[in-house]
Image (tube, rainbow, N blue to C red; front, side, top):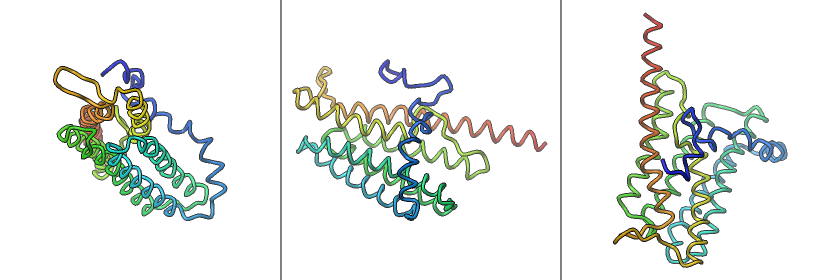
Length: 230
């Protein structure tokens, strides 16, 4: 773990950003109350659409660097809608299994719109991009699969969705600023690496580590449950 990200990790193995989602409550509650009569699924769709827009902008930003800023805005708006739909559902008493299922599906599509767009763009080595996609998908899969087999839903690990959204917001801005300053890539020997690719390497490494973490935790939880039954 690099020093830059090490400070964001708690001793319990969870990223600070993901651990403190509740701290953003003050930005959600007033808006949710204002739109309490809006179907939460409509907000979910808006979040998905904004994620798709961010993906298109990230892909095109290799040729048009100004789009990096707009892609960052689209990412954070998408993330906000993703949190807002659940808040509206709670306040309006409209929480449902179908809504929760839709939210999980849209989250995975949103992840792929953003991360896969960078993976196939000029900003990133294709192999690194593929590993990043695998890491992110497996992280989410291991969390929901735990619940599917009867264990508790897992959010543990080094890389959560809130962390991914914040990093996908920050790194396009960093990449854009560095392009303006003339440092769009870091030269390491014969290899050039973009700032966005640094983020993708992080997703590739830490995402897969998180998936393994969640697998181990679920295995232990299931073993303990079996021992209690005996």
